[in-house]
Length: 165
Image 1: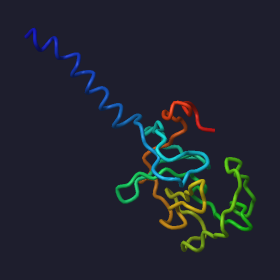
Image 2: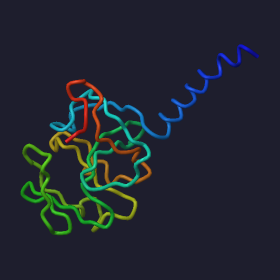
Image 3: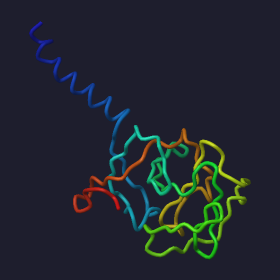
Image 4: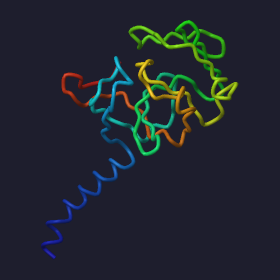
C-alpha cells in the first residue's frame, strides 16, 4: 500500500500531461520553407488544439495525408477568393496581406478549384512563401475536420520565443 501512495502522484502527473498534449496544447515543428518569412524551417510552435474558431490570416496546423502542414487561412466559408496582379480579393474587395514582405502571388481564382464560393466547413489556406507552398491552390480546400488547431506562439529557437506577429 505504501508503494501505491508513492507512485500515485507520478502516475497522475503523467496522465495529466498526456491529456493536455492530446486535447489542449502540444508543440509542433515547422517543416520546410512554405511559411517564410513569418516562420522558418524547424521552428517549434505551440499548437492550440482547443481553438476551433478560425479567422482570416490565422496560422493553422492541418492534417494532410498524415503530414502536419502549417498554413495561413486566407478564405473563409461563403467567400470567393481571387488573386489578381499579386493582390488578394475577397468577394471582389481588395484585402491587404500586411504579414508578407512582398506579395508575388500568381493570379488565381477559386473557380480553378471548381467553386464559386468556399462551402461551409471548408477553408482556403496558403503558405506565406507563395512561390514554394503546397497549399489550397494545389491540395484544394481544407475541411474544418482536418484542421488540428491554431498557433501564434513560437517556443524554439529561443531567440524567437514569444507571440508570432
